[in-house]
Length: 176
Image (cartoon, rainbow, N blue to C red; front, side, top):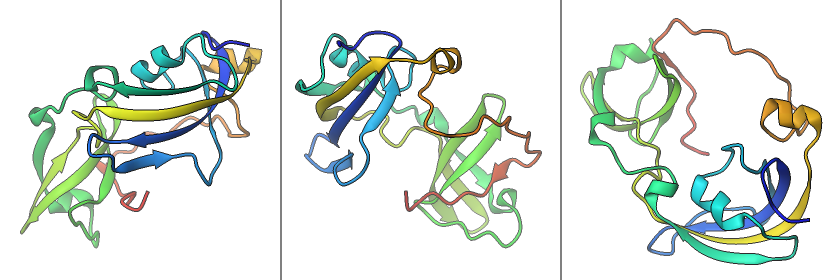
């Protein structure tokens, strides 16, 4: 069965940057399972996988415009350390969820200078050309529930997120 819109696709992959540095891989863990054509993976990789069948492998390079976009220096800004709450250690490289007009956004601490913290809301891979090695493991029809929700179901709950009145919710994801 070939990959096309609204089919569930299982892939093994390795992702590297322009220097060949490993960014991510499914090796040693579970393959990636996603609903094709529903914006669950970057558009450039979706285009490359369209029409492929289980057992096929591809190598492709995805430019920033079809991945996480170009870097936008307007997304680098300063806030006060107190905005993170009391007794919160803030250090370069830490990532936090920022709650704003456009919903939840991950921001990375770039610099801490006294009480001033410089944050970067660009995706960490913005501006990068991404190099993928991908093997298609499986393709299947999506269930009606998966189609309704726009993603693959893997045993998760659908709970509504509660609004957080604070500017920042501390979730240190610097180790992920």
